[in-house]
Image 1 (spheres, rainbow, N blue to C red):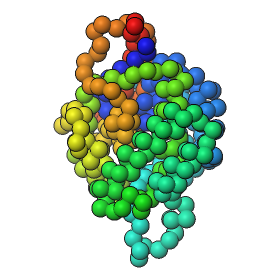
Image 2 (image 1 turned 60 degrees about the vertical axis):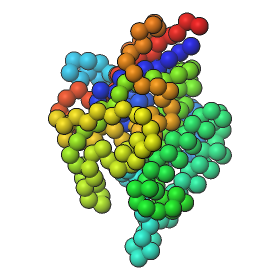
Image 3 (image 1 turned 180 degrees about the vertical axis):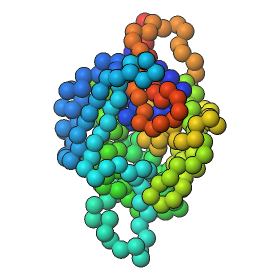
Image 4 (image 1 turned 120 degrees about the horizontal axis):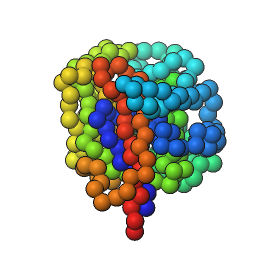
Length: 261
């Protein structure tokens, strides 16, 4: 039985998760081959192994034409015009897109569950029906590749179970297109409602550490929270670097364990 332990001392995002799994030995070409089964184009995957604080790890990125969006959710105001909405995707569009791909059933179900969690949280935050949640074109593509990529990676690496440490998030505010967001960002806080997911807020870090995608991954895929397993054999350790400057070592540490049945 292969167990993945996520040591989230500096939060979690989709690119940190994939960076950590690539650092553990995930086959990058196999990941690209599986993602090519999605009927989407216009993105490039990059990964580089580098040192930060003299510790080697992997930075993973989805590069999309037009840059990145934060949060990727748009509320459709009737008087706001339609310049964005031809390019935006609804949750139903994304679920259908995943369903119509040639990916495995497990990957499809996990990715759809994560997207639904995030969309439900955003719908609650913005007080709008789930069907009306829009995902910006850039943010949607970035998120589709990130989320589906994480699910593909778990299958390729034959991970049976995921355990995580308590999560760390920052504090203060981050600036987004529509103004300021408090940290933890609203969608992350909403996804915590009704759960026992432990989050430690770091007052020394004035930025976001847990992204909505990261929280969606944790809420959907993590089986339990606690310390490093004491009764299992660690096989390898990997580090996936975050892209934000936190003033410290910004990485997700992943440890692959094998449990003897």
